[in-house]
Image 1: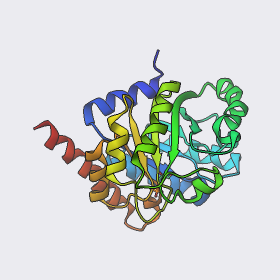
Image 2: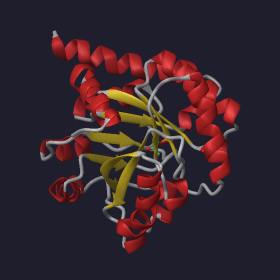
Image 3: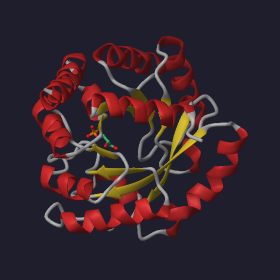
Image 4: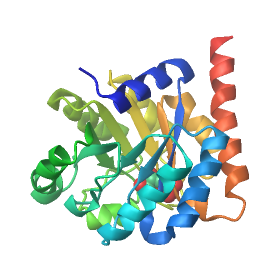
Length: 254
Ligand code: 1GP
């Protein structure tokens, strides 16, 4: 049986075709700022709030950020952990993810083994996801010891994604790396999406409506933006991106 958050995501993707999620890195923001970002993002039409970062370490701050956001918005809070320390009892769900192109068993299955008992204890909904770092990969690529897949090798990314699907993962995430200059190219997204029967999440370096729409048109089911919230006009930029995704759905349906 599908969990509450997974069901919500599947239904939303079925209706809206491509949805947006806002990633908040607790290390870069106070809890008050986080709740303002979450509220603005909700008004703009974001579907869920993801919480996590590549180098996060304070669990107490993570708990406070999530509790503060929950007082303001009723969107699902999904953890996006870099290891077993990124777990908070206050979250609704967690990307139960394996970094499929890591050379370190810790990021393939080790951290997950350490985290699983806590996830059960806190009754957090696990969302099984295959995480693939491509292109420059940013900090996530370095920390996760990923054998990053070059942007001009889309078929390699597709092979990783298919392996994830065959393992039983229910989402695949193509990660270009937070803040990278160039987001995952549409050609790579298209090639990966073609071989998948499960939703495809794309993130890393998406800053404009045009980039988000291009990723959606290539087949992304979920667009994640994180760094954008650090810009002064973040509310405007997130609104434009989500507006672009909605327009794309209207065009496709007409
Ligand atoms: C990073 O894919 C996410 O894990 C989002 O990237 O911060 O560049 O939006 P940005």
